[in-house]
Amino acid sequence: MIYVKGTQLNSIEEIPGRGQFSEAQRGTALKLLNSRESFFYDNPRQLQFEITYRANIVSSAYALKDSGARFATFTTAKANRNFWILTAYGGFLLRPDVTPADAITDIFVQGRKYGFECTTAMMIILYKALLETIGPSTFNQLFRGLLLWSTEHDEDLQLTSVYQGDSLPGDIRYIQNPEFHPATPQWQGENLVDLGNGMFFGHGIGAGMLGEFIDVLNQRRRPGATTSAFLTRQIIRPNFRRMAEYTGHPLRRLLV
Image (tube, rainbow, N blue to C red; front, top):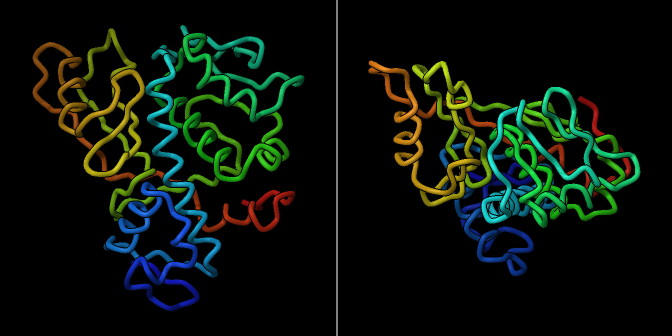
């Protein structure tokens, strides 16, 4: 359910700017309208921002899948050193002589020069989608000193966790594998992007239905394991309403 200025919207025809929506944005808007969750917005711009950003998260996930970037552990991570400094713990720190927009874009253009964990992949997808949403000028002003590493993120990405919501396109989900093989701790779980229509993307595995990811993780359990991998309740998503301020006040950093 969608509420704008306290008024519930009952159809996509009531969403301001709907005429400019792409097919993906229209599909995202319908998911929000039909969700059991209630989404509240102070103005139409906040709603339009969420619809656009969510659709861009999905398209960025597909783009990363096709980029040629490989799965790697934190100890075997690699990056294009023309854009990133590879840290001792497997993170990617932005070089001071390049822009954040160019560095993020390079991952998708020269993916074969990169290898990273699935958690890092989620951050890359979120940053790429935000770049597509707010444009390179604002993105470069906001994300100087960018660090890509696990769940560490710039505070302005405003990630939040929900435990009693509907999984929607652009949400980040997690499959836990409680009896993973100790020789391969990287398979203790898999971070996923909800692509919509029952499809997900997980770096190192690809795109598929939820059951396919669970099957892959179950094949990587310790001998004698009896507990199946499972989708956790946690849903991670940016605070879309607050981040919409980037479009209204592009130079102002958000307060946590």
